[in-house]
Every structure is written in structure tokens, then in C-alpha cells.
Image (tube, rainbow, N blue to C red):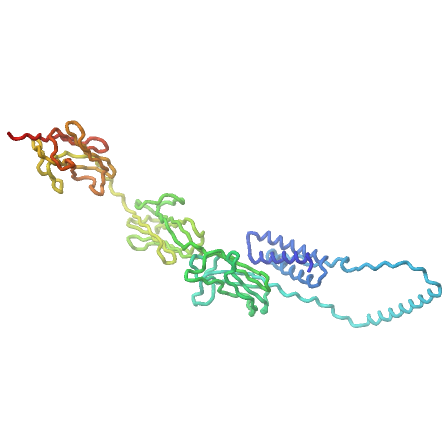
Length: 496
């Protein structure tokens, strides 16, 4: 086999593989490479003398010419150039010059030549009178099979037969099996063919070579079956061979992330990706509600259902077979019927994937309540007492003469209004003008509300009686004094 023929064979096999891959983006470049190959193969006929190789060249050119004709409507010239004379004519050996024969010898030679001429003439007359023979027939080369259609899909037909239910190139995680549909052209029933499925450089499943065995050109096969968790994620390629020559392939991918949706947001206006979530309450007059959510693991034809509920009843639903990217952010809108605003009420949106709920979000549409008049935070009058009841009622209040010398604890009871979360407040006790104790904190509305009654306590840490003297207690909000009360504890005077 010549080097030129080997090079052309490699180029032809590469073109057949590209044709089977069906790259539409590079179609023009592929057709131009086909034209170049046909032109080169025509010229190569002048240098390839082997009859089998010349026949194979004609077969290749006709096959690719059909491909070019199907795509452009123009059939190229596939005439194989005749073999150059240098490959057929063999030079005669050179002879040494000889002396002319003598005269008698010359007459003898002349007579012999005349006899030869007469014999040749008689032979030609007999040969020309024979009936013509049929020209020698060039053997017809065997057709070269090729895959004209290859599709992969998931699932079986509803009746359980081996048919593709959904065709795609990307499949969700957990897909139980992959079914392939092949259509081969120019394949004879006795053709040896086989297929295999590769992931990376590894062959994960393969069918041994066997005869085609059918006149039909279309075949459906179960090409890949998974375990309990479905087909293992990864990038796969289905490859089809005829006579151990690659005649077609199809790539597909199994996703590794399960399909899920998250970060569901509800807004009354479209928001770009990454914007803050919408509110939980909308004013009356809203005509369109937008749902925005993140997703991953989505595959083609995956059923995504978006349902809008009002007061617990479904009012709108959008079911969409997925046809976008495998991950990202999506937005769906609900529009009120009749171009009227949505009525007031409590709403909820739910997102389901293949019948399984993924996420939900609640919101309301209602009239805004009347603004509440705000009351600035303040403390009321302070009452000093030796005791206090749970409801804030003082007992044994400050007598006019002051507290007795054996007093151990004093309660300062006060009302408050307009308090809010996080307000700093304090109660400072002094004796003789010097600070004796301080209580500081931040207001907790959950514990004490915005208005009510509260008290603070002054006592000795050891439980001893308080020393006599002049005292005061001052209440602060945000370091601003609110109320101050002075009082006295009498000194101990022993009896005489």
C-alpha cells in the first residue's frame, strides 16, 4: 500500500467521523475540506497504479460527493486522473551497433521479412473477423456505511417498549438508563458492526461485533444502565463502528448535582440577579407578581411547576418543561386576569420539580394600616417604697420623715411610654452627692413592651441595713435625665 494512499485513507476517515459528529457551526469548513479531498484524490490517480486502491479512491470520492450534493445541490467532478505514462512505459535496453550484413545475407533477411509480413497480415484478418467481446467490468466496490442520525434519551415509552421518551444531550442526576436510536445508511444485512460507550478514556460498556442482520436502517438500543442511584455522572460518548471503522458518534452528559431550586424571592417589579429580596406586603393595585430563584442540576424537559395561592386556594399555575441552562437564576411572573389588580389577601407561591415541592414564599396584598401616632420614650413619676407587688403597686411608701435606720432595700417604681428596642436607659443612686450604685441596660420590647410599669432596687450586697444619709435616684433614657427623686434614711440613735 502506497504512502499516498495511506494519507488519503486517514483524511477520509477523519472526514467521515466529522460528518457523523454533525457539528453545524463548522459545516462550511467541513464542506470545503470535502472539496479539497475530492480534488486531491482525483489528482492522486495519476500516481497510484494498484487497481484495488484506485477502486477504493473512486468509492471514497462518490460517498463524499453525495454528502456535498446533499448540502449544496452541486455534484463535484469525481473523475480519477489516468495513470501517468511514466508508470506504464518501460525503456528498451540499448544495443551495440552491428556491421551491415553481406549482400546474400541481406536478400535472405528480406525474404524472411516478407514472409513475416504476410503471416502478420493473415493473423490480423482473422482477428478482425472475430465477434466483438464485452468490455471487462470493473468490480463494484462495497458501500461504506455511515450514521445519518444518532439520538440519546431517557426512559421508555408508556407501553414499556424500548423507545426514546425524551431526546437530549444533558440528563439529570439519577437518570436510570440511557436509550440510543441509530439510523445507518448504506449498511448491508451481513455487515459486521458494534458500538461502545466511553467516559473519558475508559470504555464503560460495549457490544461485541455482530452482523447487522436486518434490512431496517433504524435501531433502538439500551446503551447505558445505572445502579440504584442511576447512571454515574460524567461526560460520555456513544461510538458506532462498521467493519472496525468509526462511522458515527454522539456525546451526552449526566449531571452530578440533583435538581433543586432555592432562594425564592417575591417582588412586584422585576429585579436583576443578586438584588435584595422583595417585601412580604404589597399595596393594593399590584398587577404582576415576579418570582426569582436560584437553581442547579436542571436538565432538558424537567417539569418545573410554579403555583400561586390566595387564602390557601390555587389561583394561577405555570408548568414549564425546562429548556435552559443547568444552573443559574430564573424569573417567572404571574399576571392578574383581565388586566385587573390582584385582590387583597394572603398569598403564597410554591415551586415543584417533577411533582416534589422545593420551596415556597408567603406575602400579602392589603391596605396599609393608618399611621400610628408615635409617642416619644419617657419615664413617669417615681414612687419610692419598701416593697412592691407583682403588678407594680408600691407598699410601705416613703414616709415624710424618711426611711427608718434599719432599712435594707428601697424600690423606685415608675411608669414608661414610647419605649423601643435597643434604647439605652439607666438608674443612678447617690448618697451625699456621691454615686452609690448604677443599673444600666438596653430596652427589650419583647420582655417589657413599649409602655407599662417597672421598678429598680437599691440594697446592700451583703443584705445589711443601708447607712443613714441623704439619697437620690435619677432615671435616664439615652443618657438624658428623665426623673430624679430625693429621700433620706435616718441615722441610728441608740435609746438612752
